[in-house]
Length: 283
Image 1 (spheres, rainbow, N blue to C red):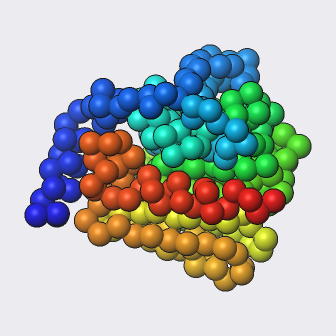
Image 2: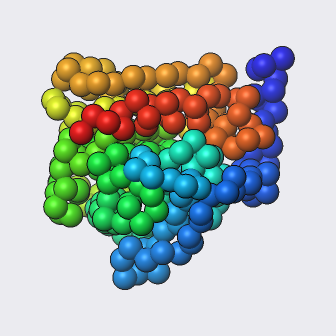
C-alpha cells in the first residue's frame, strides 16, 4: 500500500508542475511573505522571504531549487518556504542565473550573494544571522554543497563556511557526477580547469559545516550514490554528517514531500527542520 501511494504521488508530480499542485494546497500559516526582493542587479537576482509569525532570533535557511541549472523559478517553491516557516525557520528562496546565460561559476556566485544577503538582512525578518543554513534540492543541492564545502564562493562575499554556516542540507543532490555524458551538463561545467574542481566531493575535507544528506532509494535522475559518496568523504574527514535514504522515494517525491498533501511520501520536512534546530546554537 505504501509503495503504491508513493508511486501514485510520483505519477501526479510527473504529469504536471509539482509546485502548481502543492502551492494551491499551501497556506501561509500567518507567515510574513515578501516577494521579489533584490539581492543583486540582474533580473534573476531576486528572492522571496518567508518569515514565521512573531519570529525572534529564528534560524535562517537559504533554499536553492533544482532544474538542471537550466530552468526553475522561486515562485514554484512557495510550498517549501511556507512549510519551513511553519517550522519556525526564516526561509529565503532566491532565483539565480541559469545556463546558457552563465556557466557553473555564475550560479555559484549568485548563490553566495544570496547567502550574504540572508545573513545581512536576517534580523529584519526575525532571524538570527548566526543560525544560517544552506538547503537545496537536486541542482540546488549542488549549489548549496559547493557553498558549504568550497570556500571560494562565500569567500568572495567575506564569509567562511565553517564560521558563518550552521549547516548544509542536501536533498537528492549531484555531488559526484562529472564528467557527464549529457551534452548540456558537460557544457555547463566546461569552464572548470578540471571536472574534479567543480564537484562537491573534491572539497569534502576537515572542519566542514554539519551536513544532512537526504536521498530517495528509487531516485533514477540523481542516483543515491551521490549522497553516499559525499557522506563517506565527510565522515572520513571527521565531520558531523548524517545520511537518510528513503525507501521507494524518487527524485520529485522527496521534495514534493515538503508540501502538506504529500508528507506521507517521506519525512523530508521534519528531518530538515529537526537538523536545523539541532545545529542552530553551535556558533
